[in-house]
Amino acid sequence: MLDEAWVLNGSVALRPEPFGALAYDFTTRRLSFLKDPALVEVVRALGEHATVTETFDAVGIAPADRPRFGAALERLAGQQMIVRRDAA
Amino acid sequence: MTAVASRPAATRLVDHFEYGLDAPICLTWELTYACNLACVHCLSSSGRRDPRELTTDECKALIDEFERMQIFYVNIGGGEPTVRPDFWELLDYAVAHHVGVKFSTNGFRITSERARQLAATDYVDVQVSLDGATAEVNDPIRGAGTYDAALRAMDNLRDAGMKDFKLSVVCTRDNIPQLDEFKKIADDHGAQLRLTRLRPAGRGADVWEDLHPLPHQQRELYDWLVAHGEGVLTGDSFFHLAAFGDALPGLNLCGAGRVVCLVDPVGDVYACPFAIHDNFLAGNIRDEGFKQVWQESALFRSLREPQTGGACTSCSAYDSCRGGCMAAKFFTGMPLDGPDPECVKGNAEFVSAGDRPAPSQDHSHRGTVRNAPVPVSIGRRRPPTTMCDESPVNAADLTPTGS
Image (cartoon, rainbow over all chains, first blue to last red; front, side, top):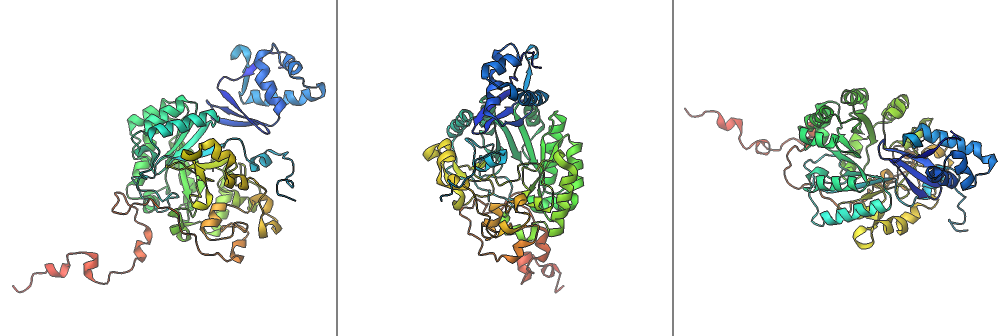
């Protein structure tokens, strides 16, 4: 995943909240919670960068935190909140 | 030390919810107090239209505000929302403005044509109300013919290809033995079963003593919910049952004024759909706009402060049930910082309830209502004092005499 291009699913809207953001998928009517403002920044920026790793670089995610952020992105991918760019 | 200064930094998501969000997650909007039925337990004492009801343009402006606040979906109810002539227009308007709609209906107006229209519209979900898995249990609560009407609506929705619409049931003493039958009705229609708690709000206060589940039924309901897990929706309704053991799926906290609120047909904003009373009125959207009421009202700010659990804080189950439902306590005359009237630990028995608060409004029908419910307690009705009370024609009068 880290070397691939990903993007926020077009059917998902993000609403900023003090803890991070609410993510709502208008197609599945599923509501999720992004519990870290930095994760919200990563998710928003995914579409502007060639790979997930480049997104981490741009947002400034420290190397030690990247496994945690990677796991969070995997979970979001499992819920189709984010999708592979070529499939978007 | 002030309440604010003593507030610990929120680390868990549920703590953030307790302190309130920038916009609600679960907003109920009752479009009208008008209703073609007169259910005995109506939370909003609906029946007659309020002449001050929001106009079509005001409703659209409110939808615009929801869109700006990114309120992704609203639960529309009433009254019966489909009796508003502009209901379908408002539904289309909301969907076009990225505000998804789930609306509750008794089903009378969900014709096969409307069902096809709904099935073809994205971001719309329907919730059909039914309070008995048989007409014998349902109709005394909701009115004559209402069982057949709800089943007809569900047939129409299924035949139109509508998937995962909701069958919504208020759990009562009479229908808790029917949980499996409700599940089967939902499954047979490709619908999801949604169970919610009976509240002593509105006309529900008048029937609470007769209809609220008995203690052993609370246990039966809890076990059934645990067994069915996320396959059954509850709207986070039963967090007072969490004191039996494991928490049920959901937030398990009172969301009133924190993540939940109600906008009523005249634009009044209340802390939750079960608390239509002046004590829980935060403001009116006509005066201040919805965002201002949600974010700034004194009532909602106070609900977002750490709450005292009173006597409940010494109970082993307090972390699970959090003292239960504010509205259930209020409308049964119990102190808000004491146990829920249906406390599964039995602690409500040790609290003397005060007088039940007088309702601050009532839109109930005053005259004869088509489909009016006939509660089964009719058998216990006061006997007629003269035959004329029962029938204007006395059979004895018809007996030929004198010939």
